[in-house]
Length: 403
Image (cartoon, rainbow, N blue to C red):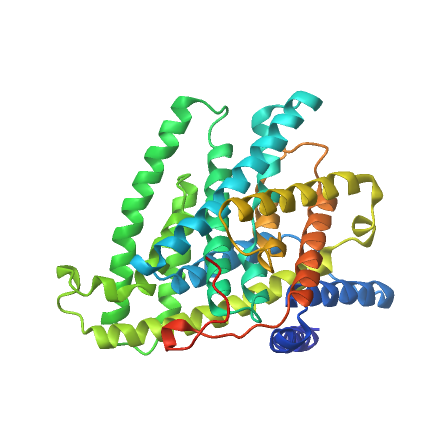
């Protein structure tokens, strides 16, 4: 039995790797294929009458670790300099404004139309408003560098803003000015902790001479995230700051704190650390979506009872996206379709306690929204046309200018 489990996991991860490689040719997001493989595996096990324990409790664990690694990977990719400020500004607006409007709009409607508590309504809606970087970033492999960069910024910001907004909504018993002030104060504390901890970890990365160094750094990162979460601090801010500091380590060259650090060595260590994070993210993300596909109920996918809610969310997502792309003067081609829901949506939904949940929202709607937005993204990318994948920082030209 143990051998069969190990072999199955290895085969599934190799299949995931194959999907990742071939997605540039097929334009089918690997997430869709992973969900299908997980679902097929469930059907095979059910037909074979093989006993399998309930694997649902593993999903939040994989989801949390996956969220940390995905945001860290995204933050490591983000370059902070004057040339990037225009992209950062527009991508952050695209991430936060539709999220706020979608969450607040539906929460107000549910509160007045159905009579549910506004705070509970908001908590249940926020998961649907967050773009999944775990799905969006790997799916943009065929786009030009500037478009991939924008999607990386936007989806990473959406993850971070969405989780912080969710933490605020679940903070305390009611939403008041006092609770908002307390949450802002806790955010400020977390920012200070994040900067200090990130600088210390960067310093350790440069100073540790032992051949094992990247694993402990990742473990410490997860540990800080979880400890901060216990004290109800917006811990995802730490992941963002840590990734940004390492990804922009050149900007810190003149800091006295790094006076004894050889920057050539530190840059090399950051490069290798980034490679380890990318590899680890791939494994955790693959296992998460395979498991999510496995626990999916076929009846939920085709359940027409909740389809009205699912379609309403999807329509609102793309209408708002169209409006803000127009307002910000961004290119419609491809950008319009890249607004998938995924890992963060599932993770936030699983974080909702029984006393905060609403009877009108369940796993069926979550599943349908994820599948619909991912399928729309896949179809949009298929018909958006093939583009050059070039990096302007490497001296290459770029076919299109998103701004």
